[in-house]
Amino acid sequence: MKNHNAFDDIYALVKLIPYGRVSSYGTIAAYLGMKGGARMVGWAMNASHTDPAIPAHRVVNRNGVLTGKNFFGEGVMQNLLESEGLVIQEDQIIDFPHHFWDPILELI
Image (cartoon, rainbow, N blue to C red):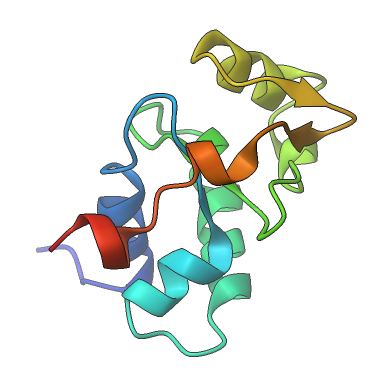
């Protein structure tokens, strides 16, 4: 039996982010009750790139900047988000509030 850990909770929540929407490291941590856990969410996203079932490309920083882009390979994160209809300029999501998914508000 596999041991349950915080990464499992993070991955389960990230899998719920809808197509064409994004969330932030801090928002995911807050929803899971991980005060100050944004870094842990980042580590989980960095570790998830071998699992295509985890849409790590949908997790960005609190300002809509593609801070995790270097872990995907050149242009991959941006291409994935653009394929979902988001517009990216200079590594930042245009109209970020419109695309932002907050599980605290949406998973009630």
